[in-house]
Length: 298
Image (cartoon, rainbow, N blue to C red; front, side):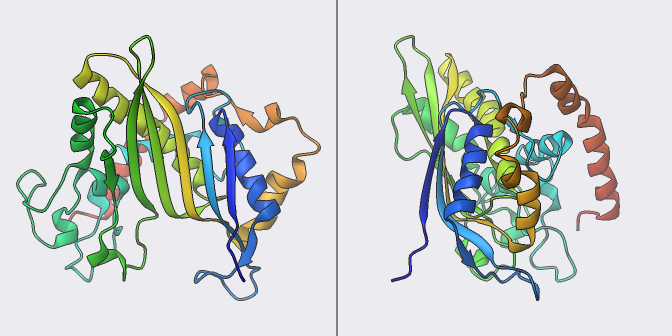
C-alpha cells in the first residue's frame, strides 16, 4: 500500500504554525515527481497538510523564511482586495496572455465575462455571483449557518486549464462569546500549496482578507464587534519543490538548532515593519499602472 502522509499542525500564531508545518513536511513528507520538474532536479517533498492557527492576528506574525519581503506581502493583500482583477484574460482571445484568474475575481465575480466569454458586469449577468457579499449577508442573517462558503473552481474551464486555481474554497461560521463578540472561524482549502514559495504569503493574505473584508463587512451588518477566530488551513498537496529544498535548508532547516525562534520572525506590530507595509502602497499602485500601460485591457 502507498499512502500520501496526512500531517497536522496547530499553533497560536501564524509564524509559529508556518515554521512547524515546514518542519513537519521536511521530516515526514515523501518524494514526489511533478509536471514542473526540469531534468536533473530532485523530486519534491509532498504531503497532505492541515494547519490550525488558533489566533490568526497573534504575534509573532511574520516569518523571515519566505521568499519575499514586506512589500510583497502588501502587494498580495492588495491583490486579494481586487487590485489585479483586470489582469485576467479573455479566454476567447488566443492572443491574450494575461492571467487565467485572480482569487478575488473568482470570489467577487464568479462567472465574470472574461471567463464565460460574455461581456457585461457581474451585477447584470445572470450567471455571475458576488460570493463575498452573499457570504457576508448570510452570516449576518444566520451566524450559525453551515452554508457560508465561497468557491473558485469552474470545472468547465479548470479541468483543462494550464494554471487552474490552487485555492478551492473558504468556509465561515460565527461563534459568540459571553460578551457578545462574534468570532469568525474560517476553513480554507487549497488543492495545491507551494509550502516554500507561496504558503506563507497565502496565509498572511487571507488573514488580512478575513479581517479587512469579511469581519468588517459582517460587523457592519450586525452592528457589533466581529473578531477573527481560528483559521484552519487544509492543503491537499502541501509541497516543497525539489529545486527549492537546498534554499529551504540554508534559510531555515539547518538554522533551527543554531538560532532562536525570536530571531527567525518579525512582529507585524513593529513600527518599522508597519512603516514599510503602509508606505509601499503608492509604489505598488505605480507598479500596477506601469503594467497596465504595457498590457492594455482587451
